[in-house]
Image (tube, rainbow, N blue to C red; front, side, top):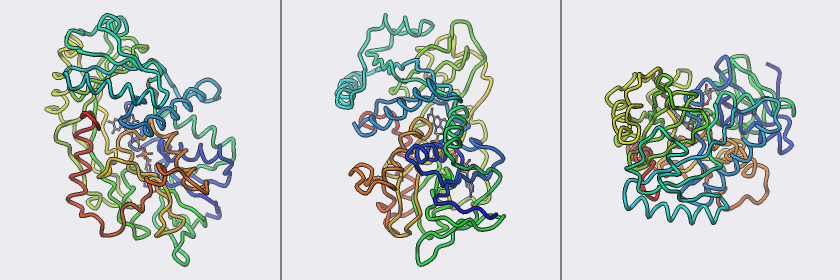
Length: 407
Ligand SMILES: Cc1cc2nc3c(=O)[nH]c(=O)nc-3n(C[C@H](O)[C@H](O)[C@H](O)COP(=O)(O)OP(=O)(O)OC[C@H]3O[C@@H](n4cnc5c(N)ncnc54)[C@H](O)[C@@H]3O)c2cc1C
């Protein structure tokens, strides 16, 4: 392979393609994306539910998600290839008094970030999602600018926009090594030969740890199992219904056309030590875990009633990656100049992809990145700074408390 590129992005999922798009917007044209599968969006991104929620427990994260929404809206409005963005809004439902208090705090974060949200009553909620029983709701937080999209459409839109600005994409090409010269990145190695580059961006998802190992870094990128079901179509469900979050039950849901998509966060998560599978092998397959999945359905019954008896048409599942501190790992390593990370997306890598791409551009090209972007650096995990069993447990805990108050 004779190509050279200033920046090689490894991984053609939502993150790798979101980065390619943002680099292209920032004027970087000499960018090559390498994906080992035969097409883009074949890894974790293909399994994502596509929910895009902006309200987070900090102003910075809320702003990041708002940036992603602004990008999705622009692509949907102006792009030649649409990301399938449906700005249907979202309803977050409190079932406990503590959660009602949390909603008040979240309203403060939304105000500080400039995000429009409002507390609405049960009648208004029932107007927005009529087939649900709203009697258990103690408070409902409405965010009209949230929504959902189809991850494969989003990746196609990123690819189109990046390509027309000069970014190149190669599928069916696996990166097997990274060459260093005097301690800094000089080339990526593939079966077809070496590709000289100044920077390599690790956007390899569940293989984020493996790629970092190629340059001697040990980063706590922990794959944690996640899954949801989609039922058969039902009368009364419409694609324009808002996304639902029921944090006290650990659940999220939305309409998938006329079917119900329902997923949740398990109180006991299942993680993988990344050392347990190889760089050149996919992460282990995941069997359908009906005790857990039926638990999601039963937890939804107080709201869903008859919808909970709909036959399940398909289970979606995968290994999104988590970090022990629940924060993304974004930026260049000072130990291995030229090695740049965009991993550990903590299960919002699709919704966060445009914002993470922006952060990466800032970390790489801005001479003075913000303190927040600097705080995401891989340098926060110096070698020997963590032990794997504890790191894995902490990462699982981030998953298990995903909807916990204050998360
Ligand atoms: C069931 C489920 C539901 C989810 N729901 C949501 C949701 O509603 N909203 C949301 O925002 N997120 C959601 N997520 C999380 C989201 O899917 C991930 O955060 C996101 O897909 C991560 O994207 P990625 O590009 O990092 O990873 P991936 O999509 O896995 O992409 C990484 C790519 O790197 C490639 N690769 C790996 N190694 C190499 C190599 N050596 N050479 C070349 N290529 C390589 C892989 O083949 C893969 O295509 C969900 C995840 C799951 C499993």
